[in-house]
Image 1 (tube, helix red, strand yellow):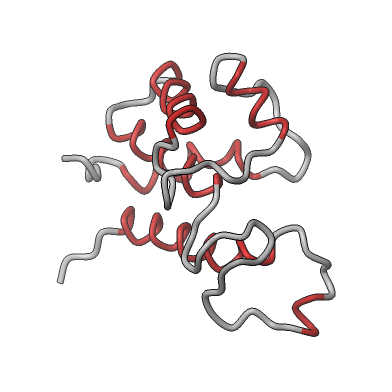
Image 2: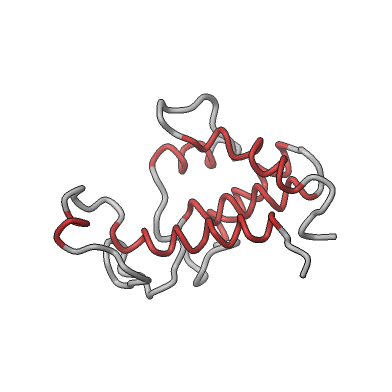
Length: 138
């Protein structure tokens, strides 16, 4: 069986995100009292089980852009499409968007700079490596 590391990585992003969405922004002590042992729903964002967040949606936009070449204008349009039309969302609605992300998208789709500890800026390099010549859309 041929492995598709890009697809595996993107599925891992979505599954991990879906497991975390119901407990996002909760106390760090919560896992000790109520460990997350599987997919839940209706927690922090009142979304059904299996719902991924903006983290996955924007990662999917990034991966899709990388399939056609590195083009920041294309990526900006995908991000705007996500925010305005719920592109790449789990259930057709944008339910979680940080202030910085909203401002960046409203100002053309891309942020300038990064916050300390924010891994978002590393995603293009990670997915560019994974996608290589074996693009999801080919």
